Image (tube, rainbow, N blue to C red; front, side, top):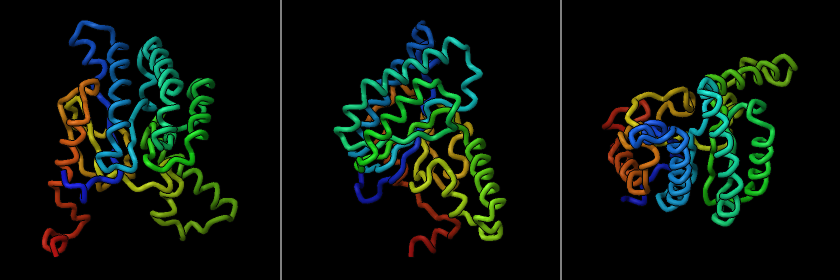
Length: 241
């Protein structure tokens, strides 16, 4: 792998936990448990693969529609992850951030997230974004509401609102946009994930289900990224100058 051309920000739609379990005749929650192990492995691998920011789509605004028992189990797994992994995240220079709307997650989960973010805030080796109760449309609406509030209060001229100012109101404010979006499980859609930020991201879809996704799969996705010519609206000849 060319270490000179690695994506600074990798975002992953972690799909396939339920199907992984069903293929083995197990309850869906077993797939989610195996998915947590994959999260641990990829968080460990990301810095060595050149990524400074890793965003994981862990729980969407639409996932509340799932069976109540499955949602409860997912919240319990999240608590376990935060409690068991915090020391390693801190020791390995990982700074934890939360993308998504506050308030709907259980109070004890929110408290653990806030404590973990505070404990790792000074770290700089890797920014780990957990997208929880996150939806791209929801995020854009929340940003628009904030800008409307500022305009109404006379804090900003609506005519002065730019893409940069709008971006500063998103959950990813201060971070680079994703260069590479990986989706496991074979589906070819964004599923309401980073709709603003992923405008020019390279998309990599693999049939590998998330619990089976390994460091080697991450490196394969990065090699794919390195094979792409990123033009950002220019022609291939302009980029190659």
